[in-house]
Length: 225
Image 1 (cartoon, rainbow, N blue to C red):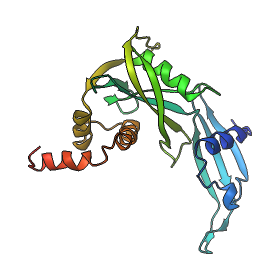
Image 2 (image 1 turned 180 degrees about the horizontal axis):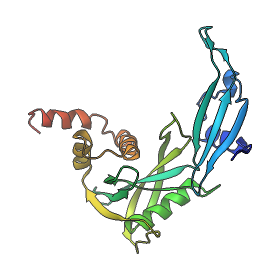
Image 3 (image 1 turned 120 degrees about the vertical axis):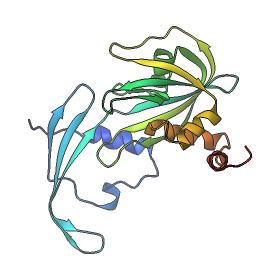
Image 4 (image 1 turned 90 degrees about the vertical axis):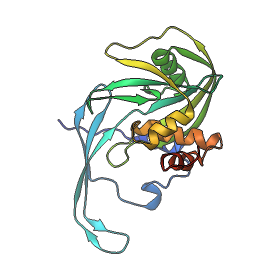
């Protein structure tokens, strides 16, 4: 299956999210000589990009190259914090890795959807909490080696219970823990979901907890805490 996808909306989406980022176009790098779609699913599209030979930055000749790239609509994840400081996460059944993973709640964006609207929806659907306040902490690429997914991170506070509304096929359990317990589980490798690690880092920096990791490490190594 081959077709010529329109990537203009992708360029706009990335430029709007990462205004400081230096794109290939800004560097004058050539576009692919051919782009074809090798898979189209309900969430992702896989494109095969073909590049002509060129000169590298240090002047060396580089051969023609083929890259398979996953196009993703983007997603949100929510650091949900109750009034007493407890964090609300989920234990999610992840088929790709055949594991139940502890994560912050998350979900994909619908085409053209405001990430804040999606964050509010996913929080309610997955955790059974609504937020009085949703503040964006930042965004990052989840796997830029092969995919263009952008993860938008929000912190939710002022939580109040609402009915949980899981989508068909979703299997998860709500998990609550203190930030220091989550930091310890990250440090010891018990929490391994990438978006959760990245979101927790952004939240920790915002809260002035940047040194918490070293404190956890001292505890493991026999410190006094």
